[in-house]
Image (spheres, rainbow, N blue to C red):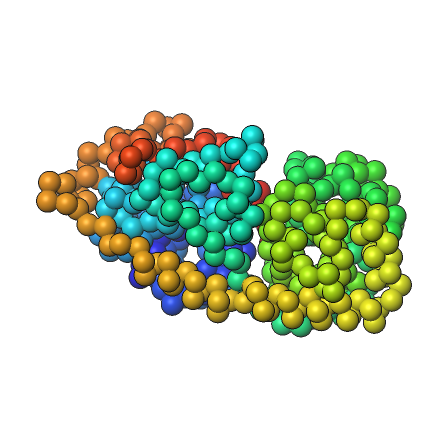
Length: 379
């Protein structure tokens, strides 16, 4: 299949494009949220950068949507309506925001585009309305057993910890820093010391490293700390487990399902986690034992082959959507879709015409949806 998808969540896409299909990734000269393409990642040749406006719309077999605005953008440029005459599936990476647990999903009022949740927690807490749903748990391309644990510090991977604050558990870092020094990896770590008040001997901001370097440096830390309160399931946590690291995780959202007790420590009691952190820092052999248990659990549940097989099943089930006898051909629809304003183009919002699917039009959530997508783009 030729599958169109935007590069929204780097680590999830890293697994998805390793399947047996052709993956078309829109690219723009300035990159940005709507034109990252491969973004320099070491992906298979089957993951191709494309200029969306130059694509043969009829050659695309399916589109994988990850933000509400993408349905309108695909219809505007391709002249084919996702879920109507372009097979489509929507991947929900994020936990619901707002009035949880009453948050209605942006695609909840339609039936033609299934929603694939990346965790059971997401499916449970989103009100997906009438949309068909399925859970496909994460899969990780195994980086191998790289753990050394030679540095008696805690590794943390989080993007934009200052801006996201309590969501990422940034306010908890000072408490953990009293148990062991922290190494914090990820984008947007500038100003973290000032925001948390953690003194420099107890905090090292490592920045956004390339994946291979991140894995190598992270695996030198004695244990991995996952302080996030409200994320569907940080892929960095699963990567750390694959590396063979023992993990310390808040028992929130899907982490409670992902981390078995013998893989480190999982609790809503921060003091219990701090005690375990000190134990692991002071006992390298115990840390290594728990890290091996973490790797075994991750390989069993979050392997790449299972993930790709689950996705092949979903893609095979997408009914081929073709124009009905009274519908115009794709080239004619492309001319009939109203062009968006300059502001709509900037945000990727096309006309709502051509996006109606089943009983209701797909509803976006503006810039908030883009923000949520970016928040999910952790390693």
